[in-house]
Each structure stands twice: as structure tokens, then as C-alpha cells.
Amino acid sequence: MIYNFFSGMVFSFYGLALMLICSLLVLRYKFRSNTFFLPWILTPVLVPFTYSLLFTPVFIPKYIYFVSLPLCMMASQSLSSMKAEIRSILVPALIILSVATLIAQQNTITKDPWNSVSEYIVMSGKKADKVIIINSYEVLPFSYYFNQDCFYTGDIYGCSFKKGIYPVDSLQEIKKLDVNKFWLIVSREAYNGEIREALKYISDNYIETESREYLPDHPELISRLYNYFEKNDLLHLQFNRIKIAHFQRKRR
Image (tube, helix red, strand yellow):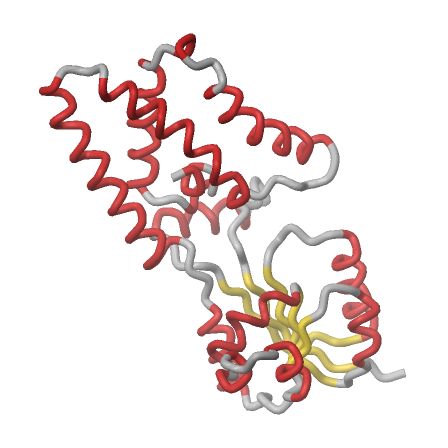
């Protein structure tokens, strides 16, 4: 529930409705009966969020699941104080919305299109070229679609290296590879300084021959808003875009 609330425009309609109902229930709750609940909710959210705005980005929504506990407890106590007729309507509504949110989130809302990324390399006719993946942990979903032999081994990183798939996190790792032609896969927008240096190094020393960008599946309205904001340089939505590009070394 908290994850859907803080995932920007990626959350489903069901998740938004669920959060609105819970928020209204919390407003009915008498905070003086347990003043610890409110700081429990606000402090873990506001402190890293404010720090991210002022200094270094450290706010990651999935790491604050635990703040949903006091929210649920306060909403439950608020429900228990209502008339039986109102509870008989709200409780089934909350259950239905909770189930609908889980189904939507698992099936379509936040699924990253790693299957399409893998298929693009296979269909390109350049499957034999090396593959460099930034960030390194993204080798897990990529290998599931591209090379399941490595995915099911006990050493997915070692197996990937042997097959020419290199998960990296730094400029030095890229320099050590010293490859002439390769596919570069970049996921997540929140690049740190070192990753930006790595991308600049690649741009300075290699020529991009082709590229494509993938976004998770979203409702049509969300996709249209994304395209409008991006084209007019009004707002960069924080979707997990995956960019794949083919590079070859520049001639000296």
C-alpha cells in the first residue's frame, strides 16, 4: 500500500482509492490515545525525503514498508469505532481494493520489459557481441530471458562473464573490459556520479550505432502524459526506463 502511494504515477487506480480511504479513516482516529503512531509514519518518510531534496538522493520507497503498520493500526481502530452499518460497507471495500491493487501491481503496473530487451539483441543479428549491463544487479532479470543456463546456476555473475555478459557498476570495470563492439544496457534513472562518468567515457570513445528505449507497461493515459512531458521538456517522470544501445570503438 505504501509502495503504491509513493510510486508516483505508476500506482494503480485501486491503490490510490485504497490510500484515500485509509487516509480518511486515520483522520477520524484520536491521535492523543497513542501519540507514537504519527511520528512512526512521518519521520521515516520525511527525513530521507527532505535529505534527498537538499543533498544526496537516498529516498527509496520500497525501504519504508514498515511505516504502513501504524497506518493500518490507526485505520483499524478508526473502523472499530464506527457504526456497524458503516463497517459492513467499508471492510469489504478495503478487502476488494487491496486484492485488486496486488493483482494490478504484479501483472502490469511495475513490470520491467526485460523480455523485450533480450529479444531485441537476439533479433538484431549481433547476439555474439559482448553485453555490458549497468547496474550490475540487473543481470538477474536480463539473464532470465537471455541466458537461462546462467540464471539457474549458483554463480550467475561468474557464468555471465564467461559468456560475454558483463554486469558493472563503475568506470574502472568498463575500462578493464577493453572491448571493441558491445551492447550497453542501462537501467534506472538515478545514476550516481561514477556511472555518469562511465557513460561519458563510452560516449567519448565509442560510436553509437543503434539504440532503443523501453518503459514498463502503463495505461494509455500514463503513456500519453509521459510522452507529452518528455517532448516538451516540462517534467521527467521517474519511470524505470531501460535503454539498450550498440557501440563500436572509434577509429584512432
